[in-house]
Image (cartoon, rainbow, N blue to C red; front, side, top):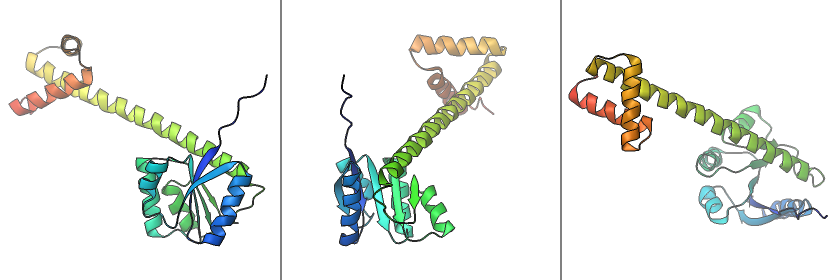
Amino acid sequence: MSAPPVKELTVMLVDNEPARAAIVEQAMTDSGYRVIRRLENAKNLTEAVTEYQPDMVIIDIESPDRDMLENMSRLTKDNPRPIVMFAEEDDSHHVEAAIRAGVSAYVVDGVQSGSVKALLQVAIARFREFHALRSELESVKSQLEDRKLIDKAKGLIMKHQKCDEPAAYQALRKLAMDRSQRMTDVARNIISVMELMGGSR
């Protein structure tokens, strides 16, 4: 039984030098990637990624400037993709700034066609791992926020109805079931109402 065909990964290339971009594009093609769009700068990077939906972004520059880093940060926040940066500047400050902006791999010694495929695979794996961790962290953070809301609402019910914590929890739970709402939404409503009434003071 033959293996299913491997999906050809698409790349958006950011490079302001046509000759250098042609070398990078050939290296990508030789490694099984397809460059679907080239930008001369990162000014409209987020919009271009939204429009063309590449699997990853390759940036080939001499040194990342502030505008480049800001545009990469925006992309990482709004429409994250693995980003690989080929740069000539190996200053640790630039490397750290690029990593903070969302770069999955920062390569100083240029594009070596023999190692491009492995490098991009590592960048994709690192990107996926980072975003899995970030999603997990956001989930935990959301659960903590929910817990805080429920605890605050329970406290207000206990104070208002002169009852203990289990009774306040049951009242909150029953209200949520009666309204077919999440407990956190009911808790948020209770807090808003009680604060308007001055009941949280």
